[in-house]
Length: 260
Image (cartoon, rainbow, N blue to C red; front, side, top):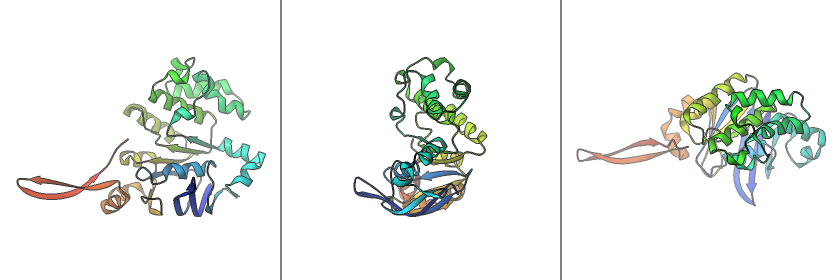
């Protein structure tokens, strides 16, 4: 197993966000974490990236409990940071180098990886960034920044990719191309958080649905089966009952939210 969560609970600033999370992630799995805003998707990804620690229960990365003790060990920390990449929802927090080329090269250089220039060229081409390599990242559009951040993460060749609203700010063609790029990385473990149901089947073959308020996992299984369970989507807040009238008769039906 890559990750094992054992009755894990997570607090932020002393406030409980997630409780009773128990599930495992196998190497090579593609998981989409679904739920409304505020349900704890980002908190979960930060914990899987070792940026937050559990307040109860445990999260294990391979055989190590993911906590302060493990990350204080220089050997484990270096291995973990090289193996796990995290795309922040706000990619401005990730971009700080003077040029796009430097941004893509930063991770491989910090980790002492070889072939840095080849990595930059490969991922710049993959994300259509060749004409932007000398540009400062802060000058770019939101979609261009997202592509730079993704290229920088993949240049390290991680084992695990944690994605927080990965397709936000990407136009439909680039969202599709990104999904295709992920599909080519056969050994990559991907855990992608979103509230966009239309992307669920594209980003993963396993869906984990978080309950509003982060108290438990409402569903863990194939995305296709989840999308057919309207009552469960209603319970999660990803669908609502829409009342309207036709020919003087009132009725209601479930309406699924699909916002980016």
